[in-house]
Length: 364
Image (tube, rainbow, N blue to C red; front, top):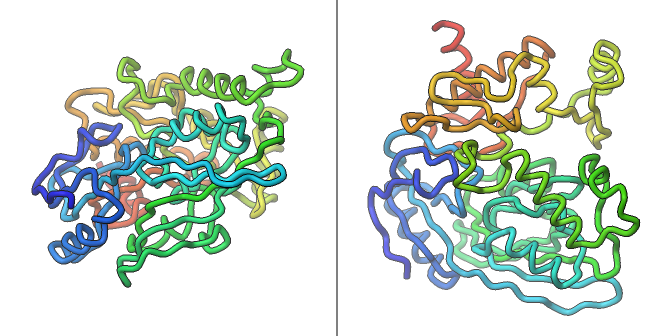
């Protein structure tokens, strides 16, 4: 059973390198020990534990965090049966996401190659419904296994029960009482690689029949150019990647913006409206790459990433910068950007935290 420790600083376990200490911490917890460890934390704190992977999509509040945190052990990956043009892969939640992608590409399985280079663990993928360069994890998930903290039972949820949406799921929207332990994927043995995203398609324009390794290498190269891979030597590395999701607006709103900004205005069809580029909106609201507010900075390579640019940066500074960007976009385009990282240790939901920070900027 994973040993419970008190007051462990969380900053070293997040890519932002920010945040306070957890009330309780248990590392490398196995699936067998998870029920007992989780129950102990719930009993001590009165709240479900935070399950931490690589901390690549978190903003942890400054000061003490009145929660227990668990990091799962288990990094198994099992290639299951295949039939026809499909093959199953079952992966432990603690497995590094990019290791899983690399293994599937090496095995000639299509379906997640465009998700190469995304930091974090497999268990976080269905929670956030991660996506990039034309693919989403929900495209390939068959089932999600986990511990229901309310009943204490291990359960399996079919993909249809996961309420997947754009960068969300029932797990993200829920009360934190479901802990993902394994994910069951169904990939393709004969399908061609996904080459639909503009940057990927342009990079492979001269290649008649791109292979899975080619697409993976291309995606990794693009992500490196944007400082969207974990690299301690990159001056933009203290970040959580994209800080805002791409907003979805009505067709009428999108048409009005397109009429004002012309053919260069990026828009993409969505099931619930029209998806816009948050990066484009930020840039055209006057926030440029490298924009600085105190010790926090917009990445010098991508306007969607906010970085802790100074050793004395705190989570509070990232919140202030995010609030300023959000206010600028709302004033310019009448669109409210929604944060993508999970806010930990705050008394209010992430959007409310940013709303209050905007008010503080207004009054400051």
